[in-house]
Length: 112
Image 1 (cartoon, one colour):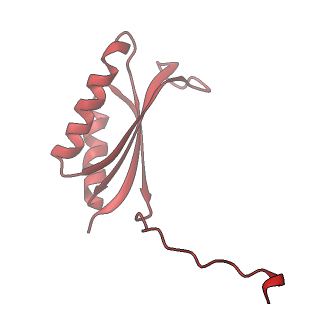
Image 2 (cartoon, rainbow, N blue to C red):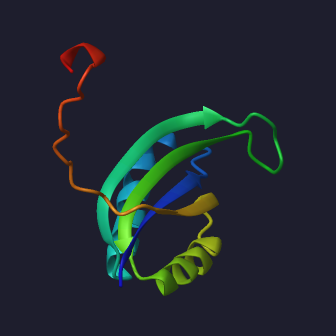
């Protein structure tokens, strides 16, 4: 059964900011190649880190929303650990997208 996930990736684009779009496209194709169905890609631009905990002081943030089997998360995590352009990664399971329900109008106290 495929679950809905969100992956927040922080990319190391230091010295190559103009290629960030190409890196995002490559990562999206990696998700698809591994069997994930990408629902949405949000490019959140380059941001400064609130504190420096490593070699970089800023990164290019990208958010992927996708559907995949639970085992795929471990595979993606280890694959991107080896990728020098992926600085940080975080995965989170999301609720299934619910269809919008029509709401019944609320009755007010004066309508009794």
